[in-house]
Length: 459
Image (tube, rainbow, N blue to C red; front, side):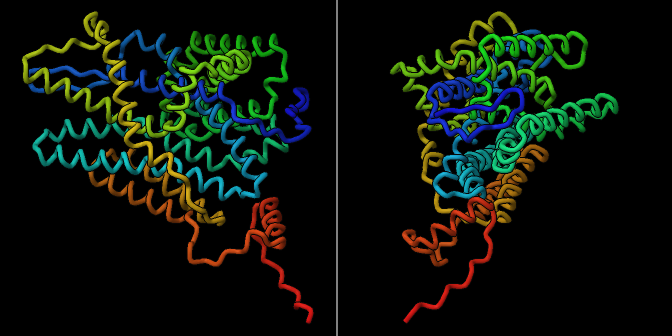
């Protein structure tokens, strides 16, 4: 039975562990498709007398502002990530799992498909270099590929902290979300006062953690407990505040610009998304049961990370193929933003979706493969998360090259080895009452205290 937080105090009356929500799965699938479409429409490729030119078609374009309001789905993605993560964690705890085991499973699910695509991209860049492709074009390809990888590092970081933030949510839900949101706004203020844009990257933690935390309120039923009119007012109020912030120059009206670095505007977007998701939850759930829609949703949800990780290499390959075809046949590619360019966007977008889906089918086995047994050591989990986040940071800061790709893959492999269970270690019998009780103590405390000595057997 679903019970909720009292809106006035934020104190939970009991834990709630909902069943899998096909409506939420559908929304996640739409978010993934939205990301692919957004990045696909930002690809700009032309050919000049000096060769092909690859650029971001949205740079300085007026159309990115209204489009960003439609396709900026990352706040919703992290809200859903909080919802799904909390549900999975609570179910795992019911089965006697630990926080470390939850984190280890997330490391496996996120890093295993990532190291495959990073390895393939690194090898491809090496081949292009050896084939004589100009180094500046190879560098551009590596840079463009690495840009979306911020999500992998940040999502891994947020999911790793989910058990701890779940405990804070159980004790003080409103205070926890208020602190995270307040810290995010404080970073925005510091950035504005000092004029140092680099300060804003601290919000890679606070903004996305706050959005993940919003998903906890959706998972435990707090949001659905409000009357529909109240949820509508929350959505309208957040949207009005967002428009006011744009009008007064506090935040850019381009929601894509507000992601690099993240700003408090995304918190307002997430609040709008969450309120609307709750308002239309039943309709979305009903829609998700239609056979064709359910099939598409299931296809995407089984391959979420694979699709995300592979869509940029697909787009880069499409851009490269377009340039090669244009140079080989003397075709003039339309300038990004021109009428002819827009005329070709529907075919371009459909091709991007189809090719990404095809590639995802080929590589999804790395994401879908069952996770192995995991170590319960928190120190190993912390080290593995550090290696995974560090590998992504290396590709973002230094750039994706054959060398950095090799280093990133090695770090991800080591991260997974750190949390993998030592198969040579003796295992306690699963049917042992003492072992079961001890697992319960370990689960509740989150630690592994020293096992007491066995009493001598009576003769």
